[in-house]
Length: 386
Image: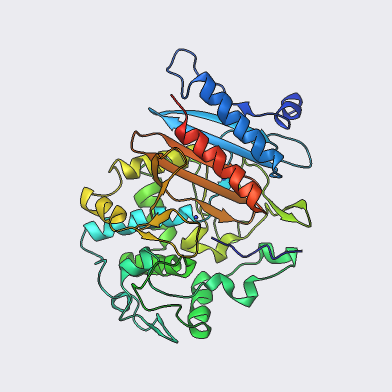
């Protein structure tokens, strides 16, 4: 059995039998303008079916345009029962959490409470120390753009377990980061390049807490989730291992078969990846963020300015401050993020024209073919004609 805790990188009846073989759509209001043309919907459904044929249990896409959603899915949301992937099903969205945290942080920057180019030592004195690691040389910007050179705390031995019981074990991400800094050397000097490390965003969450005096999850909820009315989006409470309904099951490929990892304590992910949401809520969040409804224009410009290629991620992903830029196969540019956590994989982004797309798999791709098939769903939905 492969390790199920490590994150390597970014939510019946007769209908189920049909959806297991071909993509199914959510209903839409025929009197309102349709999201995507009929031919475009057919192309997306074909891509969804191909993703399931590649080995994924279930895949869902939500396309949001002009305030309206179109949802389609293929495969199943529950391998045991054959139930379909529910519309508006809650899933663990992994590293999309980072963009929510970044948005809250940029509000503090706008208020003058945080300076992006100040050393992290100013906010977390004595915390960021280690072999080649000096909090006086690492700025808040370095953390938010993954240019700090800090090691990846998810590589700690205690998070590399084959025991299914480890999935529901609670961890303190702050303690995990402190152990990582004490036992792992820096990967490179600050600012030399960009290398994705979840350690950065646990520390960003710690800065957020230090400045506000409140838990980062409460601040993100107050500043981002509640103002946008994202009712399906939440940070799990301490000890909350079950997803709130409705939700699909989440699976990991183990020995060629889907292993159910839905019950999970995501405490170890913290500000780097603990959030739960839906495809439609993610689309609304990224649309609002990129439209300037969450942060001031100057801070949104900072989030998108001087992006860096991530040296330990797929080519073509340029990272700003909690936002990633990707050009898809048809040449269209999207801004978004994405996430990977045991049980789920999400890809999301918004085009300049305002189309938002989120693709969710309820099983993390276990090979290049299924990864490519999931990306094909995303590209097809982004590039399709209205």
